[in-house]
Length: 241
Length: 267
Image 1 (cartoon, rainbow over the protein chains, first blue to last red):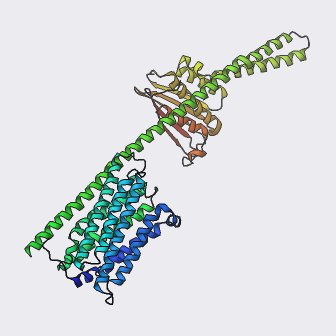
Image 2 (image 1 turned 180 degrees about the vertical axis):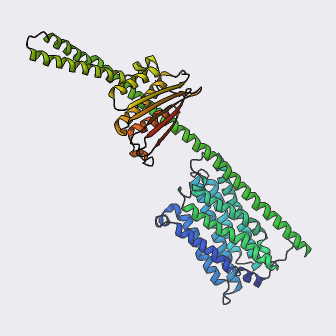
């Protein structure tokens, strides 16, 4: 990549510049939480989803409060952004991995466990490592881990869709809870993956490019993912079926 | 700057390619899945129809067997007993008293009428025996029976060349016509009924029209007489088409078409 890496302060400004886009994202997360019924929130089957959504909402909100706060050091703010992004990525993968496991009746449990352990270990290493490196490197590593997580989610989603081709279709695809979840996952991860590759080089200086691309390639598919999840929760069959 | 633009173009192209392939893949899976789903639904529908046909087949078979058994019982037991009673009473006719003679004469006549009625019922129930001569003579007999009741005028017409039909097919057609006339007798209060049989090269078209009370066609099927649903079920069993037209005080027209090659399992 020949685009120059952004300056330290630019990064913080950039991180706080998507406030309105994030609002749409939070609304979609809230909407999904509302769609989970009372009983489901307490049930162990829905635990990965509930944890994921709660983390996404709380860390996202805290992140948005901390990032523009100039009383907190740049390094600390950046460290928190990095920490929250990585944590969410791990729990996001955990949710889709558990969904995938349940759909395949735990037949692929071991592969998913290995992938989850690899991702968690890498995340822990990166979180620890970023305490000692500078801001640009932090961003670069976060995006790297994000790309890896997206690739893993793409793998799970493609595996799910492949199984649909050979499945005996008893009900319409649009009535399957799992279809909506993996549709959202595939759409979100495959669209955001290319963006994560060039992510460390943002902001580029091109105003239109800097504002439009992340909104289109990250926040929009991310919001669509939650709307898909909420649609999956209202389907005839549970989200893992 | 030029390099930056080139990178942006490459990035946009790669992103576009990834997005297009993702959407393409999703559309392909949806299309493939929904196609199999439709196929599955069609299979279920076919199985359901076959099952319903089998149930109907068994039901009709049981009905015919029961009718046959009742007819045999009437003929062999009750009919036989009554005939013996009539013969015994005939011997009493030689008694000298005129009052007794008349009483016995009346009893013998009543017994004779009852024996005849029972014999008619027995024949009627035993469609197999009735149809030994064929469908048309059996219908002729049914028409004659209706005419003797003198409840309404019966017009009967046959067109076209008669074609070969399985005997079980003939039984079902005969029963449908019988059921139709029963409905007219019970519910229509008609003055005239008209039966038309048209033998087409590939199917038989039957219409039964009356000028009676009729009914409101918007009445839900479940609240109509069981006779009508019986007719509909029997015709469906023969893979035929059934149509009913009616309006209050303007009579009823029942029409059905039955292909000669219908696959009838009922045996």
